Structure formats: C-alpha cells, structure tokens
Length: 173
Image 1 (cartoon, rainbow, N blue to C red):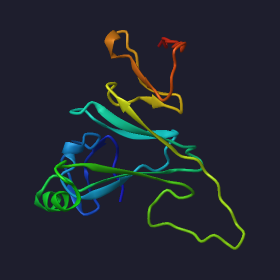
Image 2 (image 1 turned 30 degrees about the vertical axis):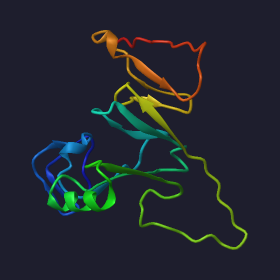
Image 3 (image 1 turned 90 degrees about the vertical axis):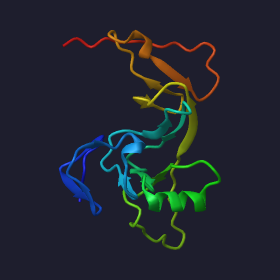
C-alpha cells in the first residue's frame, strides 16, 4: 500500500480511506492514527515545522545509509484525544518524527554478528521563523528565494555564521 506526498489520495492507505485528496504535509489533515514512511528519498534531510509556534526540527543523515524517514500521528479524532491526554501534559496534537539507518521501514531489523560493527551519523537541530525548509544540511536550513516572492528567502543556521555568504542563482527556462 502506497500513497503520494504531499498530496495523498485515490487510495486506501493503512486501512484509511483516502479517496478524497488531502495535503498530508499539513499535520491537521492527518485525520486517523497512522505512520507515513518516506521511502526512496533522494535527500539527506527531512523534518517538521509548527506554523503556529514558528519552530521545528531538521534531521540530517546520509540517505544511502540512513534511508528511514517516518512521521507517526495519532490524527485528529476521539482516539487521538485519548492518547494525547495520556502521553502529553497539555500540548495537544503532535507528530512523532523518526529516522533509521540500514533500513527503510520500522519492522525491518537485522542482528549484529559477533564482533560486527555498523557506523552511522545522524543529526537533529532546531529551526525557527523560516517556515518549511526546502533544503537543509549540517550548516543551515533554507527556503527558496523567488523573484516573484522576494521576501520568502530565509535561512536558519545550526552554528554561528557571522561571515556567511549566500549565493542566489536564477535558473533560466
């Protein structure tokens, strides 16, 4: 069972009727409890952003070694309210972001043989007041600059960048 991102529709996903298209990039549109896995990702980053609080988190890892990217939600119904009352103080609805290495799906696992080692690096850092990033790496998260929306360009650095330079490139069609 597969669905598309960010617009899911025309399918039944995880037992959920998604015949009507919905934008699942917005947490409020995830009505039922389920997990969304991002498989075959071409990018080394993913994350989440709360527009109301103007903050979020970015995860960085080599997508060839750490392909697992997942969002779990309790959704927005009575079952979700029961779990939120049990699992949070007063925060209400939330999404859980998870990442994994050497597997692209939570139920997949493997044993380490005696003396076997596996190495990987993953990084999480907070972002604020930039919106949903279009790109992120260990140095910064950024949203695209647009000539039609010049105020849309923003970035959030993960470390002090007093002398940083940003280069904007226009692609001609």
